[in-house]
Length: 261
Length: 288
Image 1 (cartoon, rainbow over the protein chains, first blue to last red):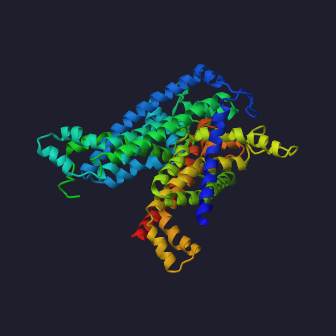
Image 2: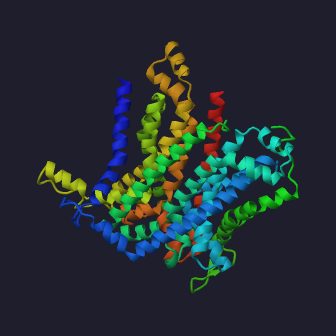
Image 3: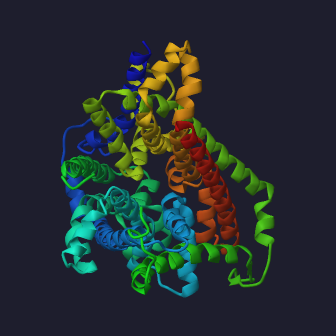
């Protein structure tokens, strides 16, 4: 009885979660500009979207920002996780807390405090400031993912490499890094998605030339409905589904990895 | 971990860690400190920030208008949290209790909305709720002649938007706790004569408390100042804390006042976080 009630409830909640997304996707193919009634199937909005140069520019900006954010986050996050794992730093707990802070801190606080910093230092807002903001909340996710995998690592792995005459750097590059690859990939994917979707921090740290896709969508959505945004949203949803399936696959592969704990 | 496995860092390790420390120092600690400094600054006649000590901004925070906005923002956030908990808990619980292969698929179904841009998901609701939108079209076809519901740009729309955006953030941490819960504890409680309500209140709730607390934090804190959702769903007719802060920084350009609001919000966040950590510690003791 309870079991069936719970199942029905879960199905209802999932319907609540998916219905609006489904509506969005379906109506992105609707010929009517007003959206309400179905007036035939069309690819027009996708065509218009592809030809809209501000949105294309914004998509390009988002891609540049997300790729730069991912690269920087992976380097800082992986390096930091390894160092904090390998050595006993004084105040390690404090460092850990400060690193984790931007993950849980409301984005608006990160946004306004970075804006105040850049204004005080006289830094012009642009790509650099957007990327700085994004890396600040993204690299902790890489760090945490890598730390979780390091916790399950057999220390003998590194010791064996060192005993066989590898320098610490070679041991890290040839033994530790391959072992960490699934966690780095998962953390990097996370950093990319977070950056790609981010609105609030970008809102405070971007200028007109570096406006990202979410920033443009927000601007358009505030004015009202726009079938082009439906098409764009549908593409976002498609990308998300692909991403979730891909990362689920990644986790399975990680589990199948003989080196994993 | 042996002492040999974790040596004290030499200068090389410090040099390698320096970029991370610098990043956190410059882009997390320094900005927060600057925000605090700005909140005690003054403004000249032209509205420029002057570095004089002043508590005027904090006095303004205590103005009934802004106290009201704080109270309303906290109210919306609390309502969002409770609704997400009530709606999400059974889902998280049921998925966690589902046998293994199917469980992964159900979980994946929760992950997709979790990973979908909240902007896209909020935008979808504009389409549904607006006056000539889908909901009213459906209502019209079911009951012709009924006046259309005016939902968009109302508090109800803001609540729908917030709950919809943050629901997965409640489901996933509770799932995490519920999945770890040992099923034999439930059987033991049953065998010892506890009714379903008793099992729920004395076993299930205490053991999933860490997940509930984490979910509550992940929903409560961001929804206090989520200005994008209030802008889109409330049409700025329901100004909450986030809208006011954003306005001070971008339109009104009263940075000291905006900073003061930010500092108070930061304090609220720190308090919530501290409470969460205490709850989680208690939950961990319970599992032992």
